[in-house]
Image (cartoon, rainbow, N blue to C red; front, side, top):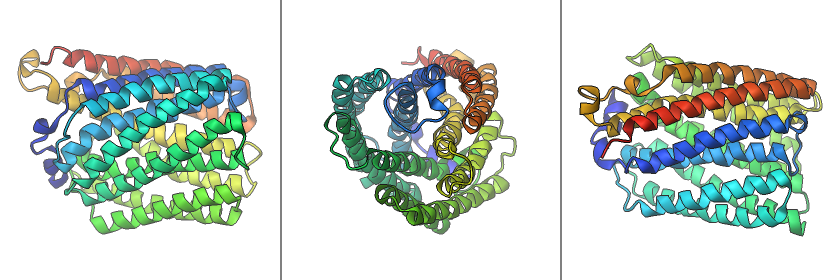
Amino acid sequence: MIAAAGFLGGAKSRLLPRSIPFRFFAAAAVFHVLMWLALLVGAADAVSFRGGLGPALASVHLLTLGVLATTAIGASVQLLPVATRRTLHAVWPIKLIFWLTVPGLMALVIGMYRGETNILVPAAAVTTVGLSVYCTLLADNLRRAGNFPVVGAFGWAALAMLVLVITFGIALAFNETAAFLPDHAAVALAHLILGGFGFMGMLALGFSYVLIPMFALASAPPSRPGYACLAAASTAVLLGALGALVGSRTLLTIALLAGLAAAALHLWQMHNVLKHGMRKRLGLSFILVRAAWVMLPTTLIAGLAALHDVAGRNAGTLFGFLLLFGWLLTFLIAILQRIMPFLASMFAPPQAFGGTAIVSALADTRSIKLNAVCHGLALTLLATAILLENATIARLGGAIGLIGALAFAWFTADVIRRIVPAG
C-alpha cells in the first residue's frame, strides 16, 4: 500500500529507455543457459570443486557475473531511480557498462574454461573497468537518494562489498600468472563471501524492503529492524572475509552465527509483510521466493557444518553451491518473473492490448512453470551429487537445469517480444 504507492508514484517519468534494462536481462538469460551447459560439461569436477581453472570455475562465474551481477546492474539502474525518485543524468554510462562487462565476461569465462591466462587476465581487466563504472554510477544515485533510507543503506553496503569483490577478483586473476598471493584459496574464499553474501546478498536483502511489500500490497516494514539486520549482515560478511583471509575458524564461526541472526531478523520482517499484505495469492514466483528464504539459513548451517568437519569432505562445495545456486539464483529467478512483466507493462503500448497493459498478459506462465520445476529438481539432484560425489547424478541435474534455463530464456524473450513495438 504505502510502499507500493511511494514506489510507483510517477514511475513512468523516471523509466529508462526499454532497451537499457532489458539488454541486461536478456544477457543474464543467455548466461543462465551457458552456466548450466558449462556445469553439465564439467559435472565430474563440479561435485568436489575446490577451485582452479576449468569448466566448474567458468560455470560459477557465468552465474555470479553473468546472471547475478548482470541482473543486479539492470535492475538497480532502473529500480533505484524509481524508488529514490531521482532520475539518472544520462544513459550512455549504462551502455558503456554493458559493452565492457558483457564482452569482458564472455572472454573471462573462455579463459577460465580453457585455462588460458593470456585470455583470462586482460578479460578480467576489462570486466573490472566495467564494474568500476557501475560503482561510480551506483554511488551517484545513492548519494542523491532521499526516500527509502533502509534500501539506500543496504545499497551503500553492497557498493562497498563490490569494491572489495573487484579488488580481490583482479588480484586472483593476476595471481594465475604472477603467483604473488600467499594463499590463493583463502583469497578465493573471501572473494566468494564478499560477492555472494556481500554484494549480491546486500542487494537481495535491501531490494526486498521495497519489492516484497509492493508485490504483496503491504506497507514497508519498520526501519529500525532493517538497520539492525544490516548491521548484523555487514558484521557477518566482514568477519567472514577476514576469517577466510587469516584462516581463523573462530572468526568464521562468529560470522556464520551473525549471519544466522541477520537472516532470522530479515525473514521475520518478510513474514510480517506477507502476513499483513492485502494480496494473499502471490503465485508461483513467491513459491520460489519462499524456497530461497529457506535456502538462506540452510546455507549458513551448511557452512557451520563444513567449518567444523561434521558433514563430509564435500561440505565446503555444498556450502558454495547452496549460496550461489540455492539462495541467490532461486531468489533472482523468482523476482525476475515479477519484475520483467512489471516493467514491460509500463513500456507496452496500451492499444496493443485493448486498454491498459496487464502484467499477467505479458508473461508466458508455461515456461516459468517448467523453469520452476526443473530448477528445483536440478538443485536437489546436484546437492545429492555433491554429498555422494557422484558425477552421473550431477550430469542429470545439469541437464535438467539446462532445460529449465532454456524455458526461462524463452520467457524472457517472450516478454521482450511483446514490448518491441513500443516507441
